[in-house]
Length: 255
Length: 255
DNA sequence: TATTATGTTCTACATTATCGTACGTCGTTA
DNA sequence: TAACGACGTACGATAATGTAGAACATAATA
Image 1 (cartoon, each protein chain N blue to C red):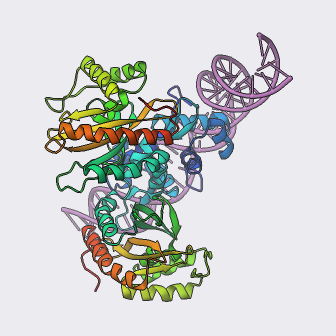
Image 2: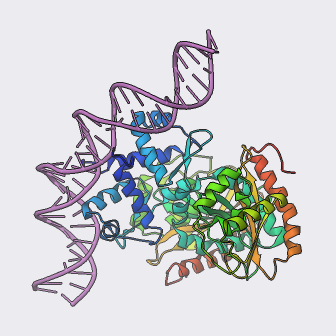
């Protein structure tokens, strides 16, 4: 193996799968062009992925798409957390009527693992599998506020701050200040930082080492998410995330 | 490339991912033993999957688990059908109060893509990402009944019939007879074939070629799923699956 | 009908993946 | 506390494989 310690053909096959994030179906020649590979090289990799059902061939169009085995493997990721968490998402939606999400930390992002959407016509629609920045989401900030300071500092160092609205916190010191505040309150808030009209409250989920790694957030339009509503939500939200934490092996509750 | 036309290192890396279907975390040596590979071979493959985030290392235990990028890719599979279908699953649960599933055909099985569970304490719990036999599930039979006869015959030929209960249909001719019946009715039923006490109604979803490829099923305990209830369910179930079919590009409704 | 594009096959050989050896770290045991 | 065993990881020689060029079959397009 070469210096960069990556097996080339395995890398290439994963890059092929990633091509399908932006395309529903792709042909062999399309993939070879996107990847900069010879057609027969691409074909060999694609055929191997097809044998393993990570790709499937559409018999009608002759093109390939992501296969069911990838779906099945995907459902195994963080299945413990998702199975434990989903009933609580449903409870929170029925209590408060706004969209509820389960997110995990992924370096400088959070990834949405589950959602239960509000039944309001005007609701916040999130995308499971989607990724959003950790520094301007309530879920992200509630996690950052509850990991060891050295780790939080290292993550913040790697953040490429971008301003989404006039309210986006783009200053490290202001972010750290906010995280202190959120840690004390036990929950984080995000008010029109990511998108105007969007408001969110979140509380962290701890692993058995007592470190936050996930969060539950509740999102609604600013017009419905008043300060009083935030406070009311936070009480049971924290209670639920602590219960989930316990079920994930966390021993001591935050008081 | 060799005769069997599979690229060995890509195959091996996919087999590594499949090891995690039965294990939440695995170490390098464990994987090398399961796979029958040298430790350093296994390590090279694992490290490559880690770079691409299909595997993640648990820093505390030193073991590996399936990574978030696999989850994200998984959410892309059949996302069109799942996005279109989910609101209908929610409607059916609120109308009938029993667990509703969205399944797709996968050779001689059906795979569960989405579910919305009943709020009854005694409910049918299915597993998203799980696979069940096509011949003794309502969803499976409703799909088999609505594909070209030659294809259905070929699939049935490959079925390895197993008896789960005294009610399981294990005879090809009886199955074909039932499929005829289901096609005429527009929906399929499964009454305690897979498991005693389990009852199910399902209707097919068609693609733009007019071929069934997916289905929605409603499952409940036999005590609640009376014959009258089946009939009541089928009316709106068929209406919904036809609407989903239309949104998936199917042009003509079954009459 | 001719041309172009695509998917697929075959095979020589250049390149890589494999694996044997070795090392550092950590946990266990005496 | 020291020794031992297990594990994860690094390195490099070489056997084995994956790549890509050429060719072919098929389908789409002008």
